Image (tube, rainbow, N blue to C red):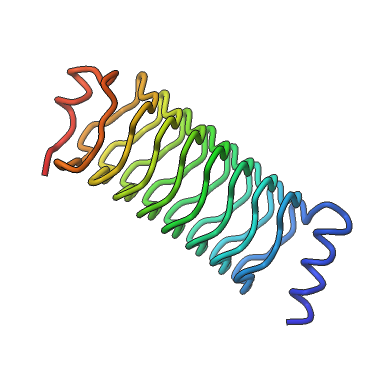
Length: 188
């Protein structure tokens, strides 16, 4: 735990852990607010409940990491690798996920109000009960994504690929959804 405390202190003192290898580390509940974690290796790291708000994680490797309940408000995750990441209940309000790879990510109940997911790869992602109010999903790939119970009020789905995405009666779809997009989806 002393070593992790030193990492936290270092992140605060020098502004980040850019490019550091923190793979597999137990960083549960750590405070990395506004830290520079650009390109950091956080593969399989446990960041459950961690505070990463305003953090710079551009191009970071977070495959299979646990970020359940993490605070990522306003974080920069542009081009980050988030394959299979656990983001259940995470707060990503206003986060920049432009071009992020979220294939198979678990975003059940995640808060993505106003998040930028332009060109994000969300193939097979679980967005069940996720709040995507006002999110930008322009050109996002949502092929096979689970949108059951998701709130997409005011979301921008212009040119988004929704082929095989599932939704149900509790899903709130934006009125801007094109007929061909709706036809490509599967109601369950």
